[in-house]
Length: 239
Image (tube, rainbow, N blue to C red; front, side):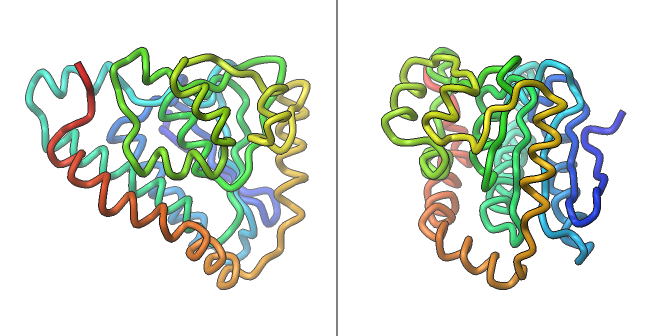
C-alpha cells in the first residue's frame, strides 16, 4: 500500500494517508510533498482535503521507530534531510494557493497534530480520536516554526495549556475553542461535511496564494531562519 493516495471529487482533491498510524518518516515527507505538487498540477482543483484511511488514526506524528535507530546509527544526514523535508511540507501548506482542509478522522498526535495546524481549516469526528501535543513527555521540543504556525490554529491560552501538559483534547472542546470548524458525530458525517465545506470554494489561485503569502510571511521567515540551525545541529531532543 502506498503511503498516500490522491483522488478527486469534482473540484476537490483528496489526499488520503494510507499507512496505518501515518507516522512521519522520509517516505511520508517525500510522498506528501509529491501529492501536494500533483494536486496543483490539475488546474481544476479548487480545494484540498487531507484525511486518513485508518479507522483509528489520522496521524500519530514522528516515526520514532525509524528516528531513534537512525540517530543511534548516526545516520545524521538522513535525519536532517527528513526534518528539512517536513519543513518543506509545512511551508507548502502554509503557502498553498487553494484551501486545505484537514478531515481528522482519528488520533492526531505530535507532528500529526502539527500537520493539521498547517492546514487552513480543520474538521474532526467527535466519536473517536484525540488531538494532542505529547512532546513534553517525550523530551522533544517544538521547533520555532512549529510554534509559530500552531498559534495560527490554536488560541494561545489553549496551546500553552496543551503544550505544557500533553493533555488529550477531543473534537467538542476543539470546536468550542474554534480550533476546528465543526465536530462531526462519526466518520461518515465528517467526510461529507469536509467535502461540502471544500466545495464552497472557488477562489482564484493567484489572490488566494497572495493572501496566504502575506498572512504567513513571518511564520515562513521563522521556519527559514530559526529552524534550520537547530536541525543542522541536530538539536531535536532534550535530555
